[in-house]
Image (tube, rainbow, N blue to C red):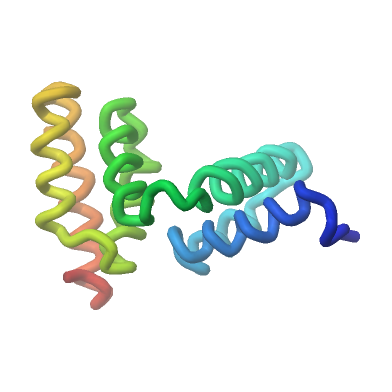
Length: 137
């Protein structure tokens, strides 16, 4: 049972709301359905702190956060997460394909051409998938 006065419960509820808003219900529903007793605490941690604390802060808007996240994931070679965040940003219309292209070009200079080359390939697959499903721009 949850305690609505508990700050962790508040962060969990706020985090789940922001997480759904940013990543979409379908993605979050899949993640929740795949949660196991082993991963349950980790899912709670990222929902409370990544989404309930950081993404909920007023200092940056969602579009700016998306730009930062995409650039960071590219820099760290986290390709699966990159694809997920690009798909969510394009589907929500927070970013356009041209915006994402500019992020990758910028990162080519600061993170290296090989990372951006891989990112262009992965993002191209995401764009093609969204276009095929009618969700592209």
